[in-house]
Amino acid sequence: MSPSRSRSLGELGLTALLASGLWVGIDLVAQVGGAVVFEPVVGNYLVGSLVGVVLGFPVAAWAVARYGQRHDVTPGDWGYDFSLRAFLSGLVVGGGLVILNLTVVVTVTEAVFGRPEAISGLLIEGLAGGLPVAALFLLAHGLVAPITEELAFRGVVQTALARERGPLVGVLGAATLFTLKHVLVDGSLERVLPVVVLALVLGVVRERWGTGASTITHATVNVVQGSLVLMAFL
Image: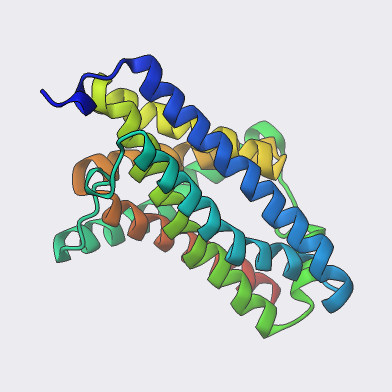
């Protein structure tokens, strides 16, 4: 058995926890910093936040990846598979998850928290910038976020947790850290259930078909649901 497979759970668990904390720190700085820097220039808080995502999330993913490599979670461990089967699996699961979100998850969330506004005031104000802002919104949340978050949370964090305690701990642990990340950054309890469901599904997809498939699933959900939001407004 190689040294990388004989590490204690504590060390690998700490690697996953600190990697997630590293992401949260960079995420917050990128989105808040982007809004603070760019809002005075373009007069749109949302644009600044989205620019922060586009520029900051790749930095966060790179930092988590480098941290993982220093603790022996290398690119060969990230579980990427770019086969047609992985692509189609991710696409099908993503489509199914959109349907689940728009039916069961929305119903349960509204029963607990009440019926929210279709679109937040901040998003309405930001999208008043028209199609360029809408395109930036889809780029940030439909492509950049899924690609980078999957590398960090399924490629590095889930791998670190699953290596010694198996796939169940990997899926549940990564899902928990992914959900906590969104709660801390978004500051909204109303999104907890949808994020939990998404995180669990992504973890299972990564375990079954690889991180390439979970990235496709994540992107499908974000693009479709983001497009529905934009259609409701634009």
